[in-house]
Image 1 (cartoon, rainbow, N blue to C red):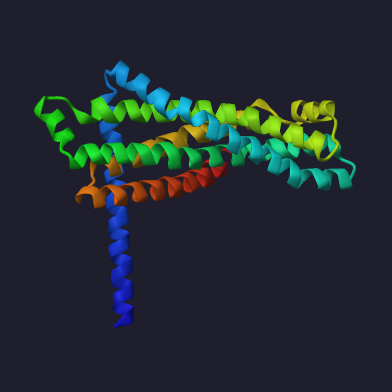
Image 2 (cartoon, helix red, strand yellow; image 1 turned 45 degrees about the vertical axis):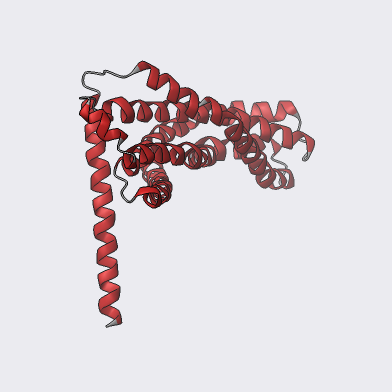
Amino acid sequence: MIGERLVSGIGASALRITQEVGGIVVLTGQVLRALVPPRIDGRELVKNLHKMGNRSVPIVALTAFFAGALMMLQAGPFVKKFGATSLAGWGAGYAVLREIGPILIALMFSGRVGANNTAELSTMTVTEQLDGLRALAIDPVKFLVVPRVIAMMVMLVALTVIGDLVALAGATLVGRVMLGIDWSTMYYSFADNLTPYDFLHGVYKSIAFGAAIAMSSCYFGVTVRGGAVGVGKAVNAAVVAAAVSIMLLDFFLTYLTG
């Protein structure tokens, strides 16, 4: 009896996950179709760029600064112990540019922007505003979803670039103040050991993370059911789905691109 319930529960969960993944894929196809030819509402796009990007800079900068500082605190004592201070910047910068920076910023972006986007679209859905747009012959995907998807992808890349710079500054400051590593040593450690590809590797990931956050948040927003309670469940599901997607994409992108 217990085994049957366990199998039934696993099957129901698998079917639900498959349904959600399929819905996100279908919405992704609708977004791509809406971009051919590209007819985007300019005011909606600019509004979302400002709301999702500019207002996220302080929290992203704070997160990135302490991420870089933490990496230096972890790597600094070891390189000093073995007399390899010329590698201190490389140890912190490599981890930040390739992994820690893109992932942390994407998770912060998902929690702040993705959740807010899901809540907005969910509220529009349960109050029948999307039905009103359809009654006016306005496609909600073109008018609401596409500008949000583009804004999230563009702004996450921009925030990742800003975060990388702030993280490197944080690593340099902690290296100088707390570990006594000279500014010039840190500079040449970055310049001699890090390559443009290390930076671009994180940018590639941020593009994929931005798309995953955008599609999951929009999907759960436009498919919500159940009124105010459904809005809360949709926000929770969107944040969880985005976090899982970020981790899966990070693994496969790291494996494929090295």
